[in-house]
Image: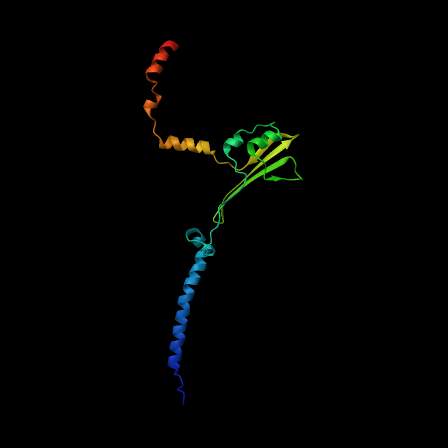
Length: 171
């Protein structure tokens, strides 16, 4: 059997078709690389590595609230500070007069919060403290939420008949 040689025209069409198909495949890849440089993919689309993988939400360290910090006073003992703030996450053998409280919160593998708070002692008495701004306590948040959601009820401040009667004798 004899083979028919391919014409140069047919070879050019195959090359053009192959080049066009390669360009169509390369265009989305180039666009993905360009957008990844702007972190658009990581921000607005789920990360490809996380498809089908569940990651736990992790609270790690000492969660401190502002009401705990407000109870600190210079001159308190180590036991008093430990009762207010809890056991420190980091105590160093090289700096025995410094306690470090660190808190991290990760959701789906991404770190959302990182706070540090350091307490310094002089002669086993609290000398000073410094750190990041702490969130308000849950009790304060609940009071604020209740004040926003529940309107003031004027009848709640009404003393009633017995209150009126007792006010006569209090005067």
